[in-house]
Structures are given as structure tokens and as C-alpha cells.
Image 1 (tube, rainbow, N blue to C red):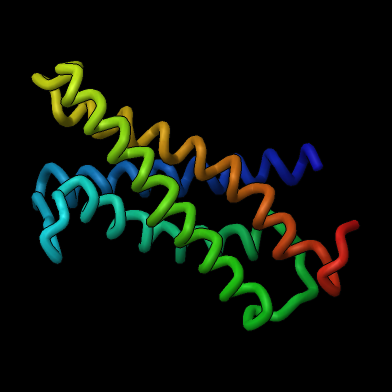
Image 2 (image 1 turned 180 degrees about the horizontal axis):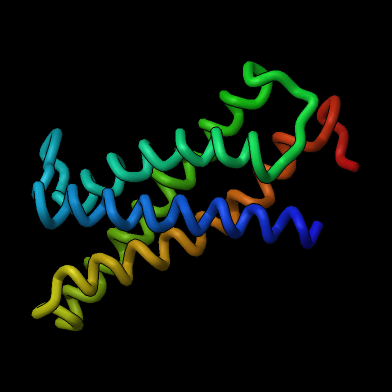
Length: 145
């Protein structure tokens, strides 16, 4: 389990760097906004969507050994990942940013605030993801081992 956690951490590190890069490009360089959503929320959804797909490939090939087909694992992985990325992380980011703005904290440094919020969202998402991914890829016949 420790070796698996270490591999998961390496994959997570790669995904985190990619996620922060894309998040900052969408939020602060391109200032992407869609469907009336705030720029930071749009950036979160776009960056997380790309990273979820990269994460599936890396975790499937490198972290977890699985006898299950891609068809068996992909949709569960995507549902869990998108829940964590779109709902859990986005809620954390929105909560941190709005609370900070309401209290007047870091108002002068939006980029720093956005990245602190993103970091907290990613940390919570990584913990949740590890346990769910382990279950998807490694438990056979839906039985807990």
C-alpha cells in the first residue's frame, strides 16, 4: 500500500502541476469565462476536466494494477473524478475566495488567493480520489478485500 501511495503521489504531483498551470492560464492569462460563471470557476472546471483525463491514463497505467477493462473502470473513474473536481474542489475554491473577499483578506493579491483556494481544493480532492480510485481499479467483483 505504501508503494502504491508513493506512485499515486508522483502521478498526483504531475497532475497538480498541470492543473495549476492550466488553471492560471485560463483564469489569469486568458481570463476565460463561460455560461455566466465567474472566471475562477470556469478556469477550475476547464483545468480539472483536462487533468481528470490525464490522471485516468497515468493512474491506470502506472499506479494501480487492474484486471478490469477500460470500459469497466473508465466511467466510475470519470464520475468520481468529476464529482471531486467539479463539485468538491469548486465548492472549496468558491468558499475560500468568497470568505476571503468578505473578510478583506488577500483582496490586493487575487492570483495568490485563487491559488491558495485551488491548493486547498486539490488537497481535499486528492485524499478522496486515492480511496475511490483504489476501490475502482483493484477490488475485483465489487468485493472489498
